Length: 358
Image 1 (cartoon, rainbow, N blue to C red):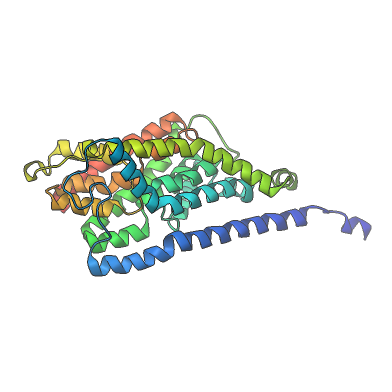
Image 2 (spheres, one colour):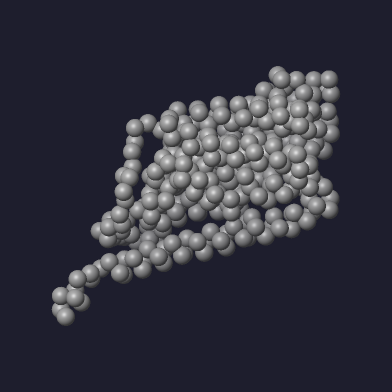
């Protein structure tokens, strides 16, 4: 009897703590996403259906062109942008830091640690409820990488948030058309799952264990110490390495809107050079969730062709200069370059399809 009662004195309490931590993380994520994303987007979908609009262009408002480059243009854009995203950005930082201290590494590695297509699929599908813009999803991608989640799975989560966002697809159908939605969905899936999976090839020689087992002593070490201290350390590190570059890049892009998105006449509306130029501009520029819809709607009103519009459809939300800076220390440089080239290339292909299909 004595031997039986003392055979596993610590394993069960530790496992209960792990389960409790996972439940806490899920509750915070669900409450946060409900308040910041799900509930507001539920109401926004009705507006999109009835008004066929979700607001004015964040680039130029109701004007045909953006304001000339200046400090005022930078400041005005930054204020408008942060007013739109601050709740989601804060939630992203909170969840990205909590992920590092609440979710067990062994569980994450089992699900997302391999370079297999299965891990990429799980990472991509896990992004769908988040519906975050590329910058707000970046802290979560950074948190996943700090837990040694594979490059493919982390990228699929990061890229999937903005590109296969179900709310954006609904808004797009009501405001633009189902054809725009179809193009976005097809190229979004290619980017989220295809590009992310092949990015593993550029990740270097780092290999994670193929067969991972949960060991009580590993969990004890991971969950030891004060939770508050570990979380504060995690969130401070994330803020220190992410926020400064985020702020500076948004100001820079806000000032250069007129250069990135010049006025276009109808005669040049679908030229291949314009498609390439807008694909690159869209890749660099930073927008809130679903802001590509009113931007495209506004630019097409003033003469932009369906080709450049379709290029922006993919490249505007996928990545941006600020989000690339935010994740730059978490992914190998070759991976980041591969993602940049892939986004621009798919944007160009999307633009060509837009000329033919739209």
